[in-house]
Image 1 (cartoon, protein in one colour):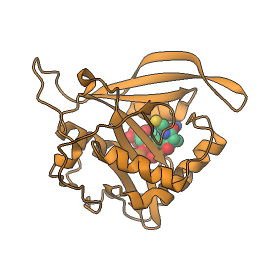
Image 2 (image 1 turned 180 degrees about the vertical axis):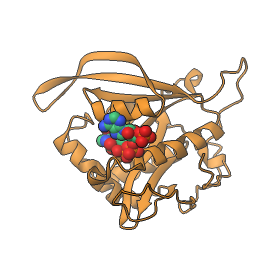
Image 3 (image 1 turned 90 degrees about the vertical axis):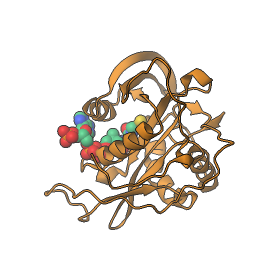
Image 4 (image 1 turned 120 degrees about the horizontal axis):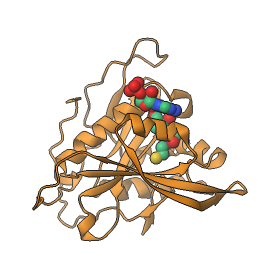
Length: 228
Ligand SMILES: CC(C)(COP(=O)(O)OP(=O)(O)OC[C@H]1O[C@@H](n2cnc3c(N)ncnc32)[C@H](O)[C@@H]1OP(=O)(O)O)[C@@H](O)C(=O)NCCC(=O)NCCS
């Protein structure tokens, strides 16, 4: 088991002995134009993360660790630990970063929902946007790209683990097509109080009677830019 960047749920990301090809960390995505009226730096690009993004991603994650119960992680991971988390995710799943003119503005990744083989077609999704950049379409752009790749991997169920209450994340996930399927009571303790947690799910494909095996992200020939 490894701890992944959302800190809420520990998962071991898919190990893939077959993965021969390295993910290109610099594949570019044709940037979607940002809505007028945002104060963003004109263009947003999404690419696969690399372990070298660890420090910048940790800077995005840090205020959520130290100032909120959005993540149940108590202690800031080190940059080295964050590097390890990114590398672990990338063995089987996409880890995406959203770039604006002044650097990385957010990230999203998928990880194994559970380790047993029968769960292979389900993935957990996680997203963090730099605090001052929220509400500008970055989370949506990341999730749409994440879903596109997960469909290519033949993943059909997406699950998000969200501390409760967290109306921002719940509202966002509902907008992205997720619905609440589980509510756990007082299962987390942070900042001197107990917190609930919910699971939300979204189906992104058909549940075939005999599903084709899931394809590790390392095996995909990814062409970013095909925003739907
Ligand atoms: C939740 C989060 C990822 C959303 O990303 P974002 O970039 O702020 O959201 P977007 O601007 O892309 O919004 C996408 C859609 O969700 C809706 N949405 C976003 N935040 C919302 C909120 N607080 N309440 C209700 N709806 C919301 C938007 O209205 C938008 O809908 P539209 O497509 O009709 O315009 C971001 O706010 C964040 O990082 N929050 C803190 C970390 C967190 O909670 N992560 C989730 C843990 S799994």
